[in-house]
Length: 222
Ligand SMILES: CC(C)(COP(=O)(O)OP(=O)(O)OC[C@H]1O[C@@H](n2cnc3c(N)ncnc32)[C@H](O)[C@@H]1OP(=O)(O)O)[C@@H](O)C(=O)NCCC(=O)NCCS
Image 1 (tube, rainbow, N blue to C red):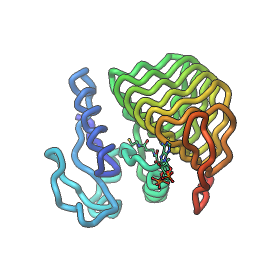
Image 2 (cartoon, helix red, strand yellow):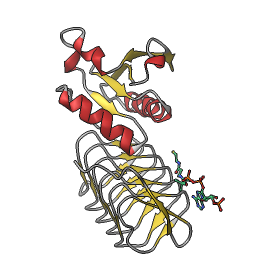
Image 3 (tube, rainbow, N blue to C red):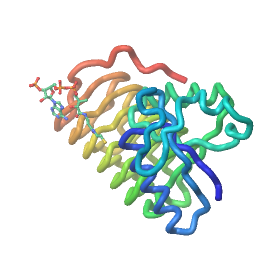
Image 4 (cartoon, rainbow, N blue to C red):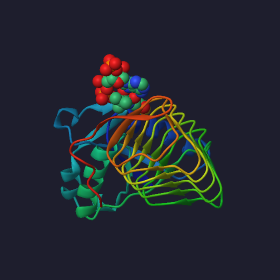
């Protein structure tokens, strides 16, 4: 079996585990062996029957461990970017996790280390950048471009041609008008309707979406 380790041991990682089980039921060769998390209080604990192996240092302790790929299963774009950068610095590698009940157009393009959960639809010529997380029940319409490290919460609806720059945290049940651009590091509140471009690092809520405040520190570009 092809072993894999989840980076993160929170709610998203447990959901990713469910997706891995669905992949196994669909006949994929994949075997999760545990979680890696920065929180030392979790090390040694068992979650859903699998151990929290330790922090990224775990990979240094024995030869061969570095060969086991990671799945980036941390919900927050900022925390995920931080941990993925650390992992890449150590020479670790990532694979993508696509739930078998997600519909991905054969004309869509997916980057490295992407996670796509159940019942999501990714349409024609949509582009998902590296380490993007798309939760369950999302709609990514034709020609949408999603930058690296963005997270779509469950039920997000991105209309055709929407552009998300890097590290956008797109809230539960929020939606966009076709063609809008959302700046890097922006946070879109749950159920917001985005009808015009959003500046970088803005926190936007409401229908229509309005800037409520700005994130500090600002998103750090790759
Ligand atoms: C937008 C958001 C990031 C704001 O968080 P915050 O800065 O901690 O905001 P607060 O909870 O302090 O609320 C500030 C104000 O905004 C309002 N508000 C918060 N979220 C809102 C939303 N989604 N839509 C409309 N108003 C919202 C609050 O009612 C409050 O209003 P008040 O000042 O009149 O009392 C957050 O509420 C949110 O919607 N996050 C998305 C969560 C999500 O998608 N989770 C998915 C996990 S899988």
